[in-house]
Each structure stands twice: as C-alpha cells, then as structure tokens.
Length: 273
Image (cartoon, rainbow, N blue to C red; front, side, top):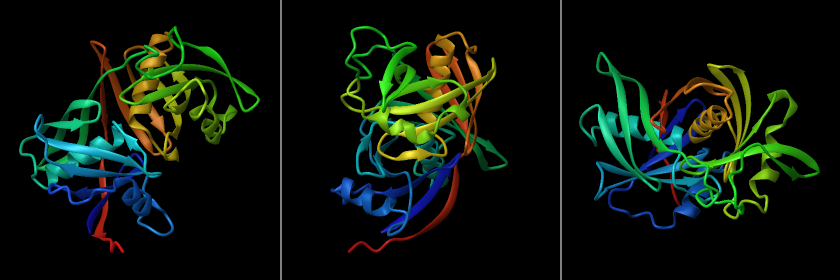
C-alpha cells in the first residue's frame, strides 16, 4: 500500500488514495498504521475518495480506529496533498467531510503551496448539537472529574470540544482523558486547555478524542477562539500557539476561518499482512 505522511503544526496523518474504495475495514487499518512502534505512526489516517457533492471526499479515522467527522489540521494536509497531486485543479477546492462540505484555499507563491486556509463553518453551543446531556448551554460550568473541579465551556466545532481556561502550567494534558469520557458527553469530547495571553493570542494544549495528547488540534484551536470570544476574553481574530506551531483563526459572520501550515514529511509503502 502506497502512503504519504504529512503533518500540520505537529498533528500527523497518513494519507491514502482510495478512489476505488478497496479498503473496507478502516478501523483495523487505522489502528495498524498509526501504531508508532509496529506501524508508521500517526494521529490518524485520511482516506481520499470520490465525491458526488464536492470536488473530493476526505474520510478521517483516528489512531484508535474511531471515526472523526472533521479535523482542522488534517483537512489542511489533505487539501495540500490533493493540490500537489493535481487531483483537484485550481487554488480553491470543495472537500466533502463528515461535517459537510468545507472550502479550502491554497496560498500559492511562485508555484509552491505556502499554507492553507479552511472555512471551518459555523460553531454551535447548543448542547443537543455537541451532544451533551444538558438542557442549557455549557458556558463556564463547574464539572468534577477525577476528584478535581474544572470550569468548562463546551461546543460543537465540527466535532465536540470542551475548553478549560486557565494557566497551562496548572494542568497536565493527560487530565483530559477523564473529561473526555465524562458521563455529560455520551459520544465523548475533545478537551482543550486554553490560556489567554492577551486580546490577540491564546495558548492551547489538547487531549484529542480517540488520539490522546497531540501537538496541535485545528478544530480545537477554532473552538477555543470561539469560546474565548463568547466569554469576552478576545476579539474575533487571534493567533493560537499550540505545541507544534502557530495557527491564525478568525471569526467572520459566525463562521471560522483557519490558516496554517501543512507539510509532507515522507512517502513510502506499507506491507499489509
């Protein structure tokens, strides 16, 4: 099986051409490929398939084999890959995801892709959308998990996200595993610890649902900007510093635009038994 390994601010993915849909058991495939000792190693796999409603389709499977409807860093890598391979012509493309069709724009300079901007769509604080077992929005709400109190804000940004605001040094990212599977979230949740530096910058570290600690989370960064804006901590535009680099996030008419890097690290073949 031919594959390409890519990363966006340290969030890494294995990209596989599957226009003929010959790979059926994606859960088993992802678990095998993403293993960092016995496989290639990645936070997830991105399958490329044909689309009837967009230019191309992206299917995301997390490292543990679970399905993800959307991934911000992943879709930037995906967009750059299909542009580089000329599967889609032009500097903009519509990509079908589990969270609907997303518009990707390639930032090209001298014929080279310098970065990718994604229209991530709208966010929602509606608990039914997240989903969360709550009759009201979860905004700065006290939650007890693993014998510690957290103040959380939850929303849907393509996938469920729960944000804990405070100093990053006060939290270990591994604490997210307890919040991820809290009974409040029937489908589990991604967990982001967010520190507001000033009105224009935040710092984020993420425990990703189905993957664990990651160097970056695109949807999580977008969710943190939306939540921080809702709480009045920042305006509608901010730079997000994650362990793997920087992302630029902007809210425009309740839609979120995310700009950041995407890099090919290596290509190869994997022999499936």
